[in-house]
Structures are given as C-alpha cells and as structure tokens.
Length: 128
Picture 1: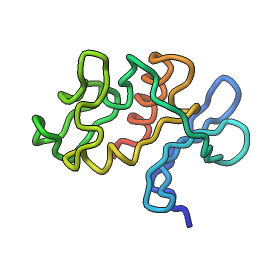
Picture 2: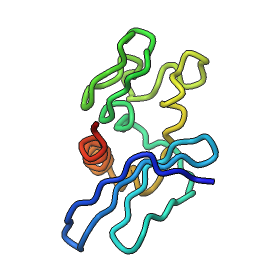
Picture 3: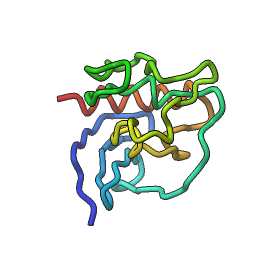
C-alpha cells in the first residue's frame, strides 16, 4: 500500500504538474506527473558517473558522518568523493533517507543539471 506524504501542484508549460513524495513498501520515492495523476516508475537505473545531484540538492535532517546536523539543500554532502560518489554507500552509517532515494529516469533526467533542477524543485515544493 502506498502513502502520499506531501503533494504540491504548480503550473508548468504543459499544464499542471503534480509533485509528491510517496512511501511504497517502506521506501520513499519522488513522483511528478503532468499528464494525469501520479505515476510511479519502477524503472531501475544505475547512478550517472560524476553526478551526485541526489547528494547535493535535497536537504537532509538526519545525521551524516561528518555532518551531525544533516545538510541544507543545494549543498554537497561531505561524504561525496572527487568523482561525486558516496563514500559510505555500502556502510551502515549511511542515513536511511539516503538509501531510500533511488535513481530513476524521471528524477535523474538526461543530465546532472536536469537532476538538480528536478530535485531542487521538489525540495521547494515540499518544504514545510
């Protein structure tokens, strides 16, 4: 069973765009749809080399090794290496919120810039 945590709507170039954070089987997903209602794309993909957008754009309130108070939005995580890869990806110290955010074609787009734009838009639209 899925649960919508936060939802926002705004006008886009092709009509209204719905943004939402979805909890599906104990994993968080970001969803955006400009056609009908939300569609959750289960399309799995590998992280883009040199990207790191998901470790830069969103704010993280959970403690991260080296960042005990989490991190603000649009700030690179201290755990990113020179190639924009997570140094604690397989570590139990990696925050659960980070492990729950999975790469998807919708979120990542075709470039790091598209991913940053999508994630920053979502951050703004779902801010408390």
